[in-house]
Image 1 (spheres, rainbow, N blue to C red):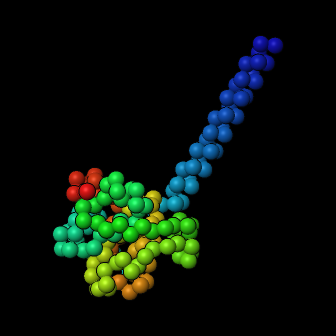
Image 2: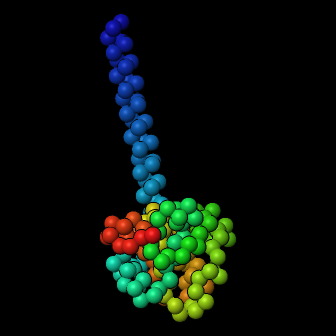
Image 3: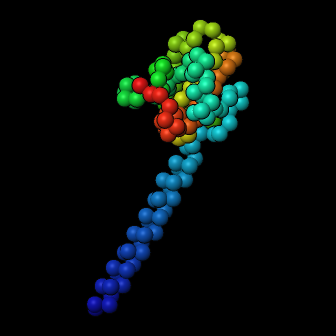
Length: 158
């Protein structure tokens, strides 16, 4: 009788571990699938160090995160243009589901524009860069590492 109880406990423990592994794999693989690509046609992907050089030369920095995140901390001199994302986190996203006010970008489409958000898992700056490129901006840069990379390099924030 006592042996059967121990076997049931061991079976429950094993089932729980298998379930946790399956659930964990789903979470990990889902997160992996949602990571932005490391290249973007017609847009130059830049590091925080390269982006800082662009900032020093007067490039427009566009924080695509929600207003509360921008208010908490952003790149010094960045302008908040929230990318309202409803579409899938995918390279084939449906832009008609999203909202991004391109009229807030510089009027001069030859001016350099740098988009950023919360790093490689954040699709807002990726999508914003695509919309800027497709709207005719000639110098679109994407800080894929976003604010986390910028902070890690000790670069100025506000």
